[in-house]
Length: 206
Image 1 (cartoon, rainbow, N blue to C red):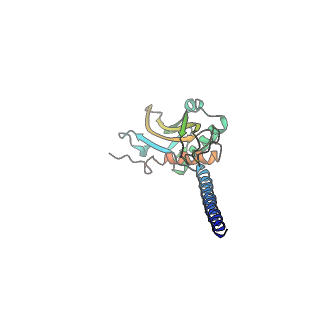
Image 2 (cartoon, helix red, strand yellow):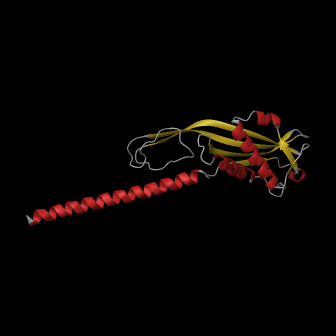
Image 3 (cartoon, helix red, strand yellow):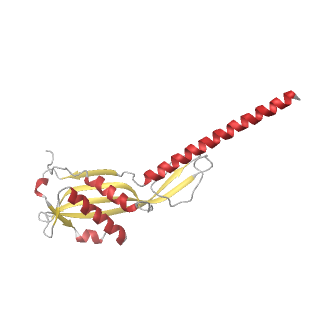
């Protein structure tokens, strides 16, 4: 009887330890998930830029928007105003002045494409900027999880209206258009990251 009681206690303690370990693991994953959701609102874009090295950027001091390009932006009017406001704010911060007779025109383009991420058994991460698909069980590796969302690329081009040339091109990809969490803030952050590629002193390297 004593032996049987000790075995029961051993089994009970073992089960208790296993359950405690599972609870701690779940708590850690929940904390990780919360942190990832918080970071989703400020995730940086994948930026790139290019420019005409034969153009002296120091000659460009005033700007305005390229109306024909703005009319073709594939965004709703709310997001279009937000994007333009973000560009205007950052251009002013860089020392440019908005003018009716500008040295340069800012053209904006948003390219959208549907993106699908597939996570197999055992995967516990993979959160993006927003969710279109349903929730699976990525923590415990139950089955396959599919995440579908619209991935956006924001393009900012600088045009010379006198020479009729494109002299600077910047872009940022990875903006989840399906996510409305801190959307305005993310647009401002994205525009700032893209325009950060423009030479701060307006001098091109030869």
